[in-house]
Length: 347
Image 1 (tube, helix red, strand yellow):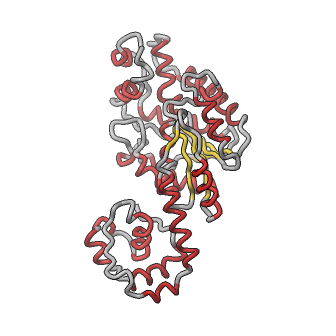
Image 2 (image 1 turned 135 degrees about the vertical axis):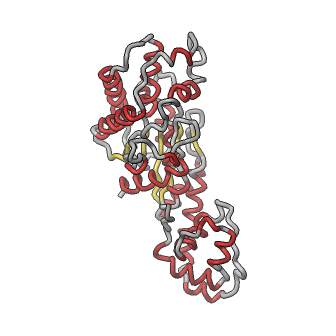
Image 3 (image 1 turned 90 degrees about the vertical axis):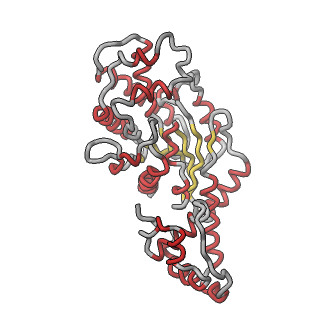
């Protein structure tokens, strides 16, 4: 994927400075041949934004070769952009959960300072799939996502203060720490991929998959989700659910693995009973995911929908975007698409 340099307005000035300081495209590519597809400005932009975090070798022959080049820079503007994006990128690596959801005073102070430098700060609250919106590449576009991870949380459970996950109170406390910030919510994947199957297991449903029953359950989940979001007094965006990453022969194994803690007291042979449950095909599941996104859109909040590019011409998630034997996307790769979707929604 081509690198989308975020230093467009300063690229020529920075290029002149770095070339005068001894930067050589040929030498840099000798050490980093995988970057050969970048043009000169993109290569320098990559070095400035990602060179250190990716542990690239930076062959600057003489960093003080031409101090006069500094006169061509607006150091306050350029340095503040570099520092702000680097710091925002570092802050995205921290995740919070229901046991430690509060933002520290230091985090709030840093976020406030970054906002003054033009970095947009947004709270990201969601199940484990929301990690796609808490990647460093998001920060390199001038957005700082402060992420609260809610693994295993369902959309329906948010409206129930006594739900097994117990997330609703923790989410409210997290939001109260930063009352002026918008929040991006991503829930619903758990309802789609696990809650229905779990109910079938516990209610001993062995009949063929019932789409009307499934749709009724999803409608209940969306209604509860909408009720919870409407009770929050702040600017809210909603991220749609991602397509399924599980092939037909992987779903049951992934379900058993993901639910091992939740179902540790399951009264029976989980894997054997899963074989008796009717599971829609991957293509059918992806249609149901699209249907849920349509329901989420009707809640009326600004939407961040998954990029259509995530799904190939065959209707399945592209191979390079699938997590390894998991029900998640490969977040590092998918973050390029989630970044574009988030930027479009915020603009």
